[in-house]
Length: 154
Image 1 (tube, rainbow, N blue to C red):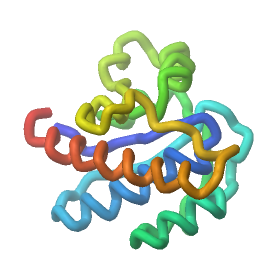
Image 2 (cartoon, rainbow, N blue to C red; image 1 turned 90 degrees about the vertical axis):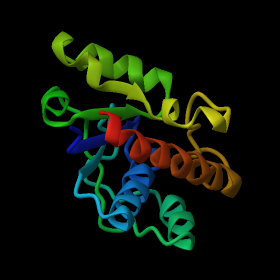
Image 3 (cartoon, rainbow, N blue to C red; image 1 turned 30 degrees about the vertical axis):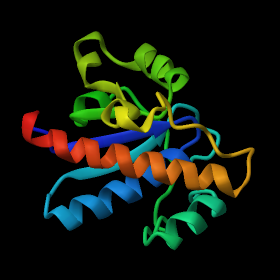
């Protein structure tokens, strides 16, 4: 049974903390007690809060990301978390190199939980404008709903 979920992207300041904040809110609303965290495959921003634009757009939808801090994905995460969800294929490949072979079944793409969204990856909004951060929220909300719907079958 799924009790711990980890989201990850490259720097852990845009996509994965957004997913963490969205999932925490959705789990709380559903009355589910599941631990949620996020990390990055690179250590560029360790200890930093989410990107101000991520925080601003998330807050407009009722998700407060201000207490979150970036951390780097570590090999122990694959033992600790039941689901380890990547935002895109490049970061999935990076994580597969770090993941012990016996834990690879825990690694998946987040967007596999929202096939109806028509996107295989959550695009990185860092170098774009407001529309990119809104798209991240749209995709993450849809995928988090899919993850929650699947919890009864895992």
